Image (cartoon, rainbow, N blue to C red; front, top):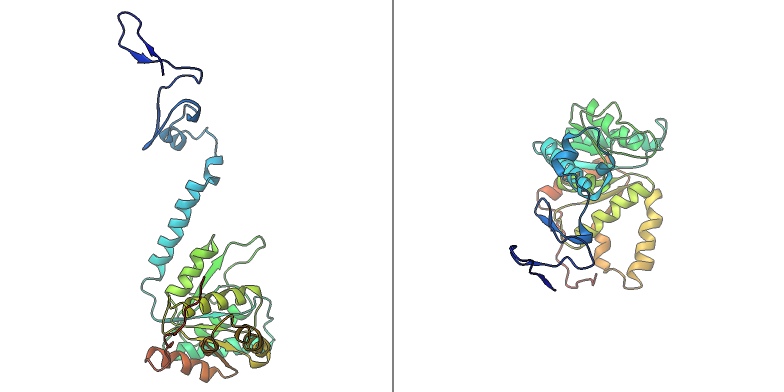
Length: 274
């Protein structure tokens, strides 16, 4: 690059065809030429209320929101006693048998000394929260921001609303000692298979996964055996990660025994390639 040697002035680099090479500082970042942004600073954008507000929708701001959700979740749940997450359909009416099953499960877990964590919504989630609350237990709801209106049910003692599914999922796994799934839809299946993946890959241990409702879940378990195992997509031992029952007493027993070390995920001899 050519040097400008005007008499009486220190030598400086020519600006060339791309405009001034003066640097612009943006926090720890230095920008030159075409990479420079507008004249405003971070302080100006923060303090000048008349400025544009679209910056709150940018990824750096979202990263702070995400961090705040983890901080809020960890802070609110840090002193929660041992707990079990219960999943199931939000569409289950209160007169349905699944609602009554969830209510009895919530009560059974509370009587065994466990807090009950649900997604905080209606249907099966409400029934488990209700059962825990009526039995004098700790009832927790982790809500999620959705396009349609859905507030935390009235039986939630401690409620947290999340914007992001992955932050909410972390709280379910971190603060639960087991997952119990009643009949549900895509959301329930999502939580079920994520938990199975975490246990299968030994990211979490001593973590039983119980499916309540043999008639509802039987076809899925049969497909796992006849297709996934038969075609070598999973190991035969992986099916043992799932417990299927119609009994609240058995579901609670499985959870309790897992904490006593009587239900343990055995180490696998083979490793899946991911």
